[in-house]
Length: 306
Image 1: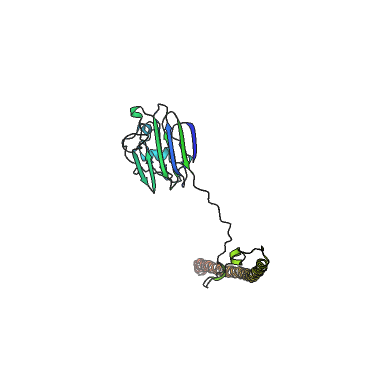
Image 2: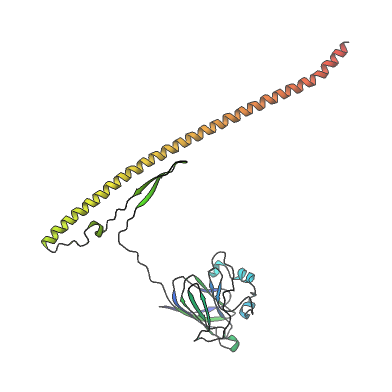
């Protein structure tokens, strides 16, 4: 169980971030006679516990100008308050006010496998302590305290156990794509598992406490060495396959580059032919125009001779 106690200034900033996996979470608030309220949100903006924004807006929200989802989105739903990118306010999950009691916690919410409970807001009756409990946190949560003064908060929680990776040897079949030519089936090499733990090698129970046991252990070590040698042969064959596959891929790259060059040469030849044809047509059209312009002058010349 971990605990913490600190003093803060209230406003629109988040108090903390409760990661998934925490359990037995308890948060206590003392606002020292000011109206500061605890709020719990999911990281994507769902309002799970606290005082309302959309209907019967609580004074702590209206004092900050937050009386709508759009105002909440623009002022608090941001990464600086630990909300996820694209978070949007959703007040539909907020349970209605149901009294005030820091012991019984009358306001309860069940969401995504979490049981959340809230004391309620008691400032209207001059009670300024608040409390929230969460049994198990199944997704990341954001804690906020909205108000206009300063407050003291303390919390307790249980962190998830540290998962220590197993040191046991692990091996499984691995499929590797050697090549995948267009229009052809992929060539796949499956490297079979080569476990090398003491159970697989047969030496888990080896010992040399007696002469017989020592002789048995030697035989077991011989068998283990033979198995490892078999693995070495497999890895040698696989290495050769990889080298061959690398050579084939390099050849494919060379052929592809050559094909690309031929295609580019062919395209250049086609464009050159088109350009030559355009020039011929252009010259022919100029010749026709020139002849058409020359015809009237020829006629005039004949008339002048007469």
